[in-house]
Length: 256
Image (tube, rainbow, N blue to C red; front, side, top):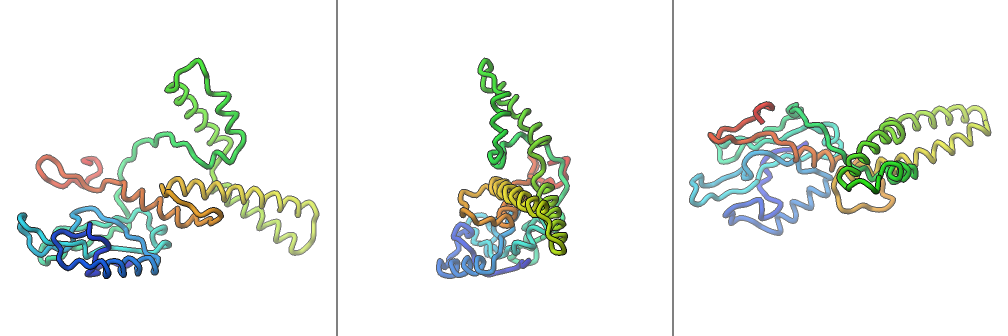
């Protein structure tokens, strides 16, 4: 993780009345970020971290300060938050990086259709047995959501748990086969590897859907990237502070 004053912006949108903007420098900076495999960790608070003139008539500033990290660090600390604090003794805003985010009460998650479910043929049976042509679409949608949630819990199961079990079983079989050949275990290993391949495809679809990305390379099972992208989207969606009617900043979970 790296944070501080980089003295350059990525785009003109990160500036205001900033005469020093250079498209060439910004392009080089963006290229360096990509070459190093860094992720911008986002922020809450004022968008400008450096301001030259503090009067409201002609504010000149830019987002020169930021915090970035690589993929492994972002996954290791999924709750990290970055806050631009008030400028006091300097024309730069201090950057506060908090590794452990605030624990806010979360509402009950609404139903989300999982693209990975399409890898199972029996999902069609769930739909056929639940959908009632005599009911309206609203009632049918509610009933189908409940049926699919139950099917997901009892039949489809947890993808990550299934992957761990399959990896463990395959590893155990391979240890035995390394000592003595067994035809039955060889056939079982092939079956389990097929199941693992299907599970990995489901995992890829799950993270792809969570990451909200519009592109995917066929055959490139980069689940770590999708995991990180989903983590970033989730952190950016969380509300850390709100200003009330008295222009006071609220940070407590209950007040939010």
